[in-house]
Length: 153
Image (cartoon, rainbow, N blue to C red):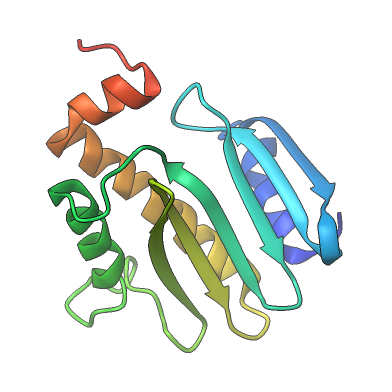
């Protein structure tokens, strides 16, 4: 895999941030990624180069679409494009945009990459995912215990 998304993710794996990183050709020209990061459960991502979209599917499984937790996650995602965000956290809408959705009880994050901003978009997406997990750890630890088997300690 020689595309910019794969190279950027591979850099994280090379630095030891991810474990078990795998990239493989998927259906219709997509590239599928699997790696361990933050939890014991593998993260699954798919990059569609034709659409310029990197999707982290089922990042948070088993959620209620209108729950306070989902609303809090959506608020964090929305806030990334707001001018009140510090520059290092703010996502430049000219370079990339993020969205989230709940489908069949699973919360997913999608990053639409504009132009040749693949590395920028991937790095911001990973920083956002890390922030989302930290928020869950602070505000909804029971969810992480129930769905990911984290210790209560």
